[in-house]
Image (cartoon, rainbow, N blue to C red; front, side, top):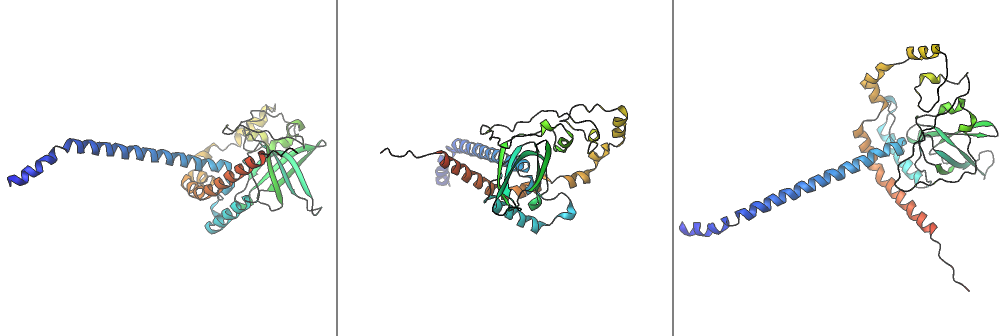
Length: 292
């Protein structure tokens, strides 16, 4: 018995060391957990940022138009289409140039430059409208984003506006919708935030296409209407809708569902962006020719 105790006694000398090792290991595991949580938060933030850059990948918020199998097939087709054509990041208010096939002249293409005044739809039904004033005449073209007749989408000026839709440019002065058809690309520094254009548009006198005074527009100057128009707009307000949880759920996609969708799509989109950056670097480098 005494021999066993004497053999076991030396182990007690390392009790303090073992305690310190256990404490260090617990600290290291805590640090690793904290680091993994930070990485998850960063990844989650990047994934959720995709909903602004690629809103068409989100499903239709209306439940009656939802179909899980069709949505997965559409997302795979959209990624495959993006491997053939570079569709850059753009928002409502950005100036784009779209080159597409001219159906009235086989073998020829048509290039149109304009400001994006609306972007809507989801999946393969995603679309956007470009507007420009050509020869004192307002021209608008609706493009389906994944239309196979589109050859090229160039983002000439990347910026946002104060409103989600710029349909009021139809009733605005022509100078706010006029852009040079030979406009050059305005390059933003890499990593710079997307600029927000705070311009306020002046509308023409009534009649208008819509009752703009009822839409709480931020990018429009004072409409200078009689008081009765604002009284009527106040009567048509629906402030109780913000408390309707079901309507809010139908209008937006839950965050968990967005994470599930973009976690599968982000890898493919990231690969496409990295490949295009490599190709741009190769195009910039010009090998010097040997002198004779």
